Image (cartoon, rainbow, N blue to C red):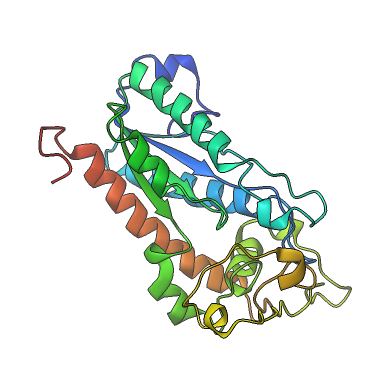
Length: 260
């Protein structure tokens, strides 16, 4: 039993524990090239959140990891078989309800740990900031908190089911990675198609990308240089940084100037 994981702990532990910070991992259910499981985002979120919460707990922070939400926004993967979509407005209502529950139990600090690129929670944070006593924070772990490490550890990090995600899968849920008889990945190279607009291809203009046209088998990024060791090195960086923030957040005074 790990007392920092709500799904594993019990009322005997919880009833007298003054939790300071909650962590809500957000995953998704969608295909990841041919070789990674549909639950990849959720498995990554659980692996990162549980380790970061453990490290923070060991340093005295009373943190609690809520159960992973295994669904995300999949409108761009609507034509990819069994991508399970939950619209942004629905996810927002779910998070609002969970935030209300936390407030009712006296937990006024929440970190949303997002593991799915199709989720965009920043507008929700803006909407809720004056509607709840809970202070919300957001970490898209695959972006800024790990961006420099990805450039250091990976030849081609990839956007979806590429080297980064495959490395984490090999390190933490290898039994779910599809391989050939020789042990190589049963995957394609994750090539993506360019649009007909130069400004979009250069990143000057943004669109919601229809994944069935962008990719061949839903992968965006070459996974073949991934190793479990690279995944473990990336995890160490993320956990160190994230747990450090959780410790700071747990110890911070909630005054009129918070978080400044």
